[in-house]
Length: 94
Image (cartoon, rainbow, N blue to C red; front, top):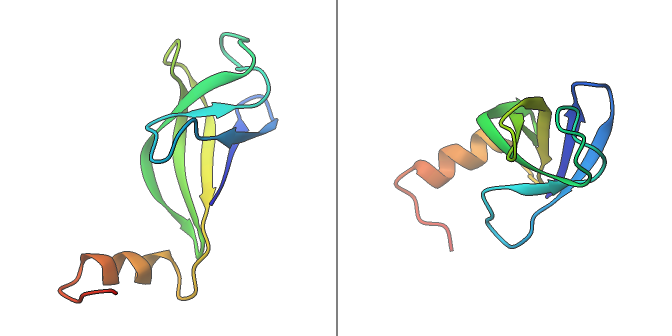
């Protein structure tokens, strides 16, 4: 999975998770709000943006300000909608 943040000031930052399944990420570059570099970012209101990309609104964990759009690009064969449908269905995946 590749994580990135398109900031409100027009920059694109990469995001790294500090550990697997973390609820926040560490964004490279400076925060558009508090100017901390690097800064911790959290996402809210996640949805499917395209065939292989989730998008959510990104917020600075330190100050709570909206800082841009977080995108998570995932590997998928049939698309994220189909992957989610199968995972929530009565079928077992082994």
